[in-house]
Image (cartoon, rainbow, N blue to C red; front, side, top):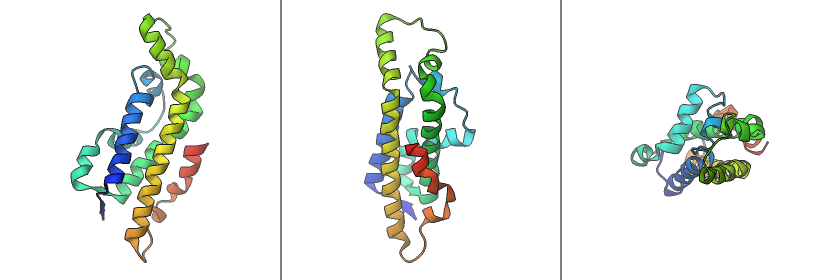
Length: 161
């Protein structure tokens, strides 16, 4: 079954916009590039944050959207654990020389990185809850797709820890 629910598309668009503006922006991208995630995870994150239009016409298959949600949840988990404590140094690349106007924006991006990561985690969780509800409803008496993906049991830990 394919999901073509406007609420899902709106939630995915919100995640993408938040990710591009507040998480992976010109001030934090250097730090994010130091994160060690496998290429498949990075591709799934890109699918979720950049390519919603591709899915608007064909819809999402449950396994596709769950894979993208898990990839973003793994990103959040690792960013909180590995990137957040060192974001100021990693984002500057050890080079603290920037223009005066950029310094204010960079400091805002770095200072708000933790809270913005929390907002991203909340948005990803909301998307997961919506998709799981549609999955449950469409499965009827059969087991929903999420029950067949063991790693989804870890999503709460990824997004909260």
